[in-house]
Image (cartoon, rainbow, N blue to C red; front, side, top):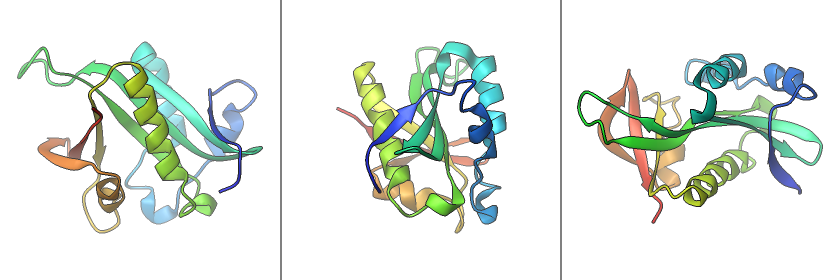
Length: 156
């Protein structure tokens, strides 16, 4: 990983590059494409936090966090959560620490906003990112979001 590694907002100048970002074909079932994430970011407004992961002048990934959403209002109306919604690292850029950087960047943003926990969900199975999230300290909550495993990381 070279420097400077940073997050950038999605803008008219970089949206086309963002839309071209693709993960390994075997990972396509595990994460929605950037185009869907950007549509959801538009629809969810202030609760979505989409960012591009840039190394020097090169786009290497995309992340989107969710901020202070009501998790399951029928079960517990006070249960509000924040976390990592999407993580797409370009196929040619995997295994270089960009995913770890992305998770840490979201963690830092959530701490800045006063969150005590960071949530993520993932597709279970051999090709899924569960081991990656476990290495970063996430533990399964025992919940699911659709068919995905929900994990949590304590921030305090």
